[in-house]
Length: 561
Image (cartoon, rainbow, N blue to C red; front, side):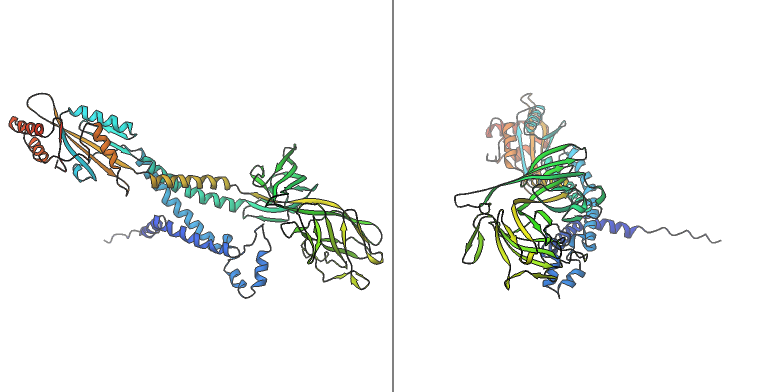
């Protein structure tokens, strides 16, 4: 009769081997190195969805038409969102979790454990002393325990020995380092998955609402809920800038202050000031002041003498003296659309190279403009930069066969030829650039990085070591004073040897010779005779030998126990 075949059990050997390999320290280190190498292209090549320079990738592609397509196929313009970078990151998280958590449990048990018992043969330790004293064993053990406790050792006392250990903070530092490294990776991942970043430029008196449509540039993360942004609106009431007017740093800004009125979800109106490195923080959504410039205020009339535009226009700064260029587009002008391209100088002067600004503050503001008429192309649905002018459908206005241009001071008007309209320079306002960022993992990452440094310093600087004191009573046969054989040994659990001064201080506290005291030549033989026989004759010989050497003690270097 044949036995029925049993179903084969699944083999978990390969799965266990894979998990052990993935969660080993060696694999974690390799993945950490791979992650660092994978992040290098993100610093070498421009990246998409970066609020500080959203057009950098397109400009790079235009400059390198042959190389750029291959870089784009490899995902080098979007490194941190590429599948291969995400794969390395996820594998590192899994590896660190499987490696750190069990190791942390073992380290925690080691920290809480009592000092281990002394080995059988203490003479094999790194720093070993063996000597005989005329003191009772209990007194020697008590003195050793009290001394080590004063030195902040963890001490356990038995009938024959004292076990002491110090340097547990090294293991705690090692534990904090590994756990904080894992928390750091989680914090970075959280910020990249649910955070966002954006930019907006506001002139004085303008209002911003925290809605995606209000941003000049908005770069959400993969899990960002753009419909659930922090309810907030604010108005730039005033932007104050002060400049140094004397000394070697003349013209350098000394202070930037944006004065805001803002309203949160509770409906209350508040005022605040935003400065460099002092952002407005509303429920972890931070508004940073990143730049500023000038916004000339103008009034434009068309050929019907109707006001078709009035207000500030943002100009981009070009140099340290805030020479700025900008464009004024008037698509509502009739009978034809108007556009103005020009240069704003806060402190204008004219030199051999043309007009320039002498100082960044508005001491003599002037606006240099040229005028265009035609089709601005703003109805085609193609986005345009507010700082650039597409001249394809435009014609420069002429006056007497020459391009019409004019320099305007505050209050002056530029009358266009043939009654095509006019522009009046009403004054100058300032504008401020704000970077809005929501990164829920930033604080976690910062705390984790600080703990990593502290833990790494502790694990490298602190030495974990053990000290044992073992005492054997020696019979004298003549009553007190009692004799004791004392063994002192130290052992380092790190690669660095234990401090020799600790053993010397312990010997001094026990009234024993230190390492600097010369050893006695007769100790070994006397100790051997004392431990091998309990007869009165051998005891007398040992006592006589001890008396001839020193009245209180004698040393025996590396004698067997």
